Image (cartoon, rainbow, N blue to C red; front, side, top):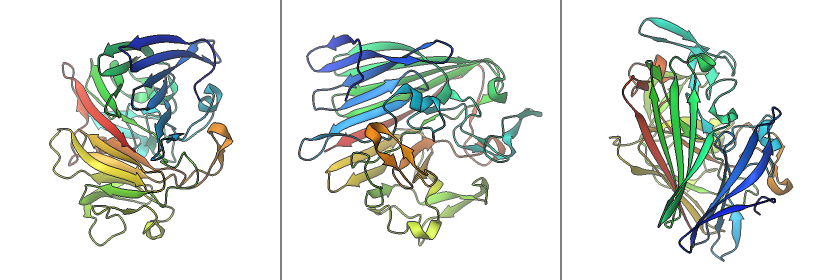
Amino acid sequence: MKNSGVTFGIQIMRHMKIEKHPYGKLPDGKKVFLFTLSNEPGMEVDITNYGGIVTAIRIPDKSKNPGDVVLGFDRLEGYLGEHPYFGAIVGRFANRISRAAFVLDGKKYKLAANQGNNHLHGGIKGFDKVVWTPSVEKKPDAVTLKLGYNSPDMEEGYPGNLMVEVDYTLNDRNELVIEYRTSTDKKTHVNLTNHSYFNLNNCRGDILDHILMIDADRVTELNDESIPTGRILEVEGTCFDFRAAKPVGQDIAETAPGYDINYVVNNYDGEMKRIAALYHEASGRSLDVLTTLPGVQLYTSNYIGSIHGKKGIEYKKHAAICLETQHFPDTPNQPDFPSTVLHPGNTYEQATIYRFKW
């Protein structure tokens, strides 16, 4: 169901379309909008410029019945309250930084400790909680929502004025392409991701019967605070082995309360490659994940208690799966991990593709 209210449509050829809808206001009166991108095969994506949140992805099932496959809320107010980063742009640094601090060129930078002693997903007011400046780009076979945000020096403790651009493109191949670009005037750390929660069964029930493949021989070992120890472990012979596709729930009991770990992408070279696949047999829907990044966080919604989401659906533990493409957690404090340092004059450029089939 599309958002109600006045709609301003931009028609692209006959089949590619993007629409802009009023989506509400923040407590300070700032207006927020929802953009609906749609293509001829029947895929629609809703994105708001508050937090760059993907609020809905609607695709048909094998019987051509449309359904929404990402968790979220019907209204802006749901996203203004506490929630587990549903669909949002996460930054400046996705995942965890130990002891909420890092040292760069001999200077210690203190960040917000918003998960125990550690820093999570950019801090108290990360990129998921800011209003981005939107614009639209039109091409014959794709539509793009471009979002921009200027993060000031020392926002959430990070050095440098950081200029951020995130492009969401829907094409006629049923791909949602997310491209990230940033530049800075001071040396800093950057690690951006999208935090969509996928459930290919119309967001109903759990994802334990979804079939998952991850092209990774190794994971980053974690301590009891989910911080990498610096060691890289082989998945062979463990519950973390998804190299051959298997149900998400097959071995999940061996890693209570569920999966929440970074996988080391095989043969990483910075080029776009398929690194994961998800399939739901009953609906016939599938998702391929492609990325230029070296890691992907598998998270199985272990800490969702009871959240009432879109259409009143109650989301519970294991209601969805996150495949967060990323640099490794705590990289600023792990010199052996692929670097996340961005220098003035350079550009951070990464991309991820979510490719759907039915």
